[in-house]
Length: 514
Figure 1 (cartoon, rainbow, N blue to C red):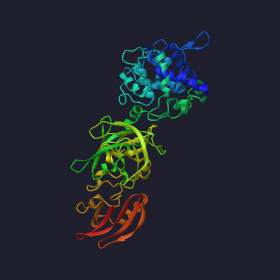
Figure 2 (cartoon, rainbow, N blue to C red):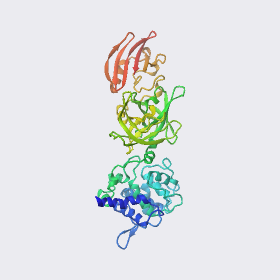
Figure 3 (cartoon, one colour):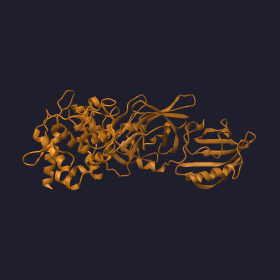
Figure 4 (cartoon, helix red, strand yellow):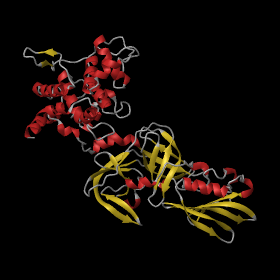
């Protein structure tokens, strides 16, 4: 164990401390990086020395096609590159490099310098090679960073340390050192290292990793504030809802939980609205198609946003210890996506009958609905800005929400917060009576004039009851009053009554949601 730890320090920690630039590192340290990568099978020499050891030529520059070849080998994809032989439109790539450039080009790791040129013989710059590495780690140029100043992001996530800038000399030794550091970086959006990804894909063997002394990089690595922000910020959005006249009803934050546009936010941001939209970090505005489900007590809503694919967050089912580091995203209206760090203070803070997580992060009003995340980049809670006391609904509460039928926000003019009501297709919107319907004492009431509803078998009430059962509701009993009668069903915190009623001299089918 002592030997492995010493090897790790010699082959890795020194590389972290010196960065990898030719001006900031000694050749012997870059030699360690090259030899470590060579042991892993991720780096090759340019020949053989007299003593039979590989020759790395770390003190010379490298061309773009050499840099791409080095990247493909670093990712353990040389066999795939040679077997796939991907087509490229470039005429200025040497024959030996075409498989490597073809593989990188097909995966979006590299682009050409023009429609038919790659610049294969051109000297690669530090920013270009850092761009290759950032793309391999899952970051997107133009969205996460600018390729011409890629060091701006790499400095923030710890891949570089300020040693690269415009005009700095970049040699093969620097590329080797950066490549080794990249193995310790976590891939977006995961918290596993690039080396672990290569190991899990069978690109690197456990014996090679052990020989290189890098076993410590096979586990999940804790993320810092900057890494968490740059990995996950594109999955967080600002949400606004509007009434029938287009006036703002509410605003807050939310986040995607799959690439297809399924997202989570606070229910109260949608309650009483007829439409809603989300603003992504790049300024793009997308419409909220509708609500899948909600939990009013926990103030959670599961919604669908148009378009996609989207970057998204993973929800954790793990338990958390008090004083664990946490991060909270929020994206307020007319503001910017931001992140705050703190610690978890309690896992069972009860307020008004609802159990919350409590952290030291207190969000301002209009900032709720964003994710509370752990140091592995997983969502552990949905932030609340109520009372500004650092509360978050545990992520486990999302298990009570389901992607059943999708209810559009604009379907009903009076009350659209309930994804279950009013009709499930059992009634028709043309039979809806807005004069009688609306919110009364906290109840969403929906009246459908019988004369306008098709009365095929089974009847509308029975169809509605069948639809409730198909969506997981349980029958609780039959109830009747002076002018109405029907059946009560429940699902979690949701209660729906369906039946008939008389009003203003007419007969109606009645749905009540509370």
